[in-house]
Length: 265
Image (cartoon, rainbow, N blue to C red; front, side, top):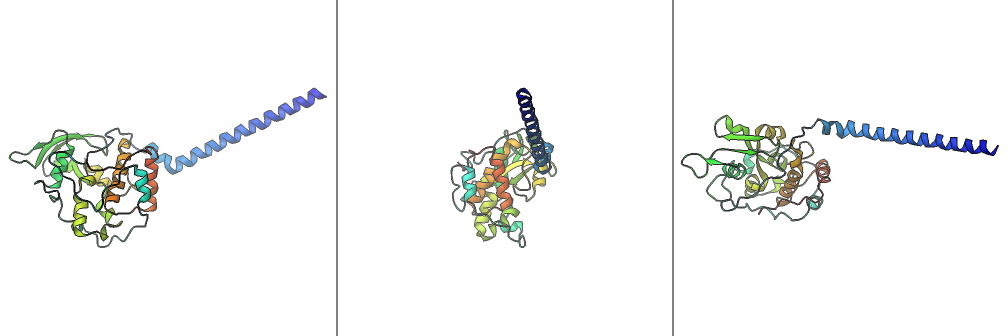
């Protein structure tokens, strides 16, 4: 009788263990399904492009920093993000590109307009057009948003392949504090090398005026720098983030918690 009772207890224990394993498996499956139908399907679908992990800000000897509203704080981008104000978007009414001054001014007073400065900074083998010491005519580079190697050739149509992107889009900035800046401060924001990167033209069009909550570079290797650069620009010009934008930035930085802010040097 004792042996039978022990056998019964062992069988009951095995039965409970089997149900516990089954329950654990079902919970894990449910977690995977929840992840897939929220964020996972988008992560799986994203291009796995490899490319640059960062982009330059200043080029020594000929490129000068632009005075921001306040210096970019050093240290972890996460810490600076926590210090940014969190608000909803202001109304987009009244936005016009001209509110940020004429396109591609020579704000740093180095004798060349901002677009050519950024091309010269970012193209690995930038070549001037004949007779000019400013106008970039050709070059190539591995651009940061897609990781593609792109040949730049100046021309009415070919120049569209390489565009200069505002890391914090001006339309986004307008709705998150730039309306409160002076005209000169907005000119600086639009021409600050910290806020400018030469990129693939189509990627720039896809981004448009999106923030980090609605668009990130397909090149995942660049995302930590990209988000840290947006945070740095917003800190430098007194701009805020929306709750959704802050959440998106924190998700990116969770993969690189020691990512530093981007300080012009």
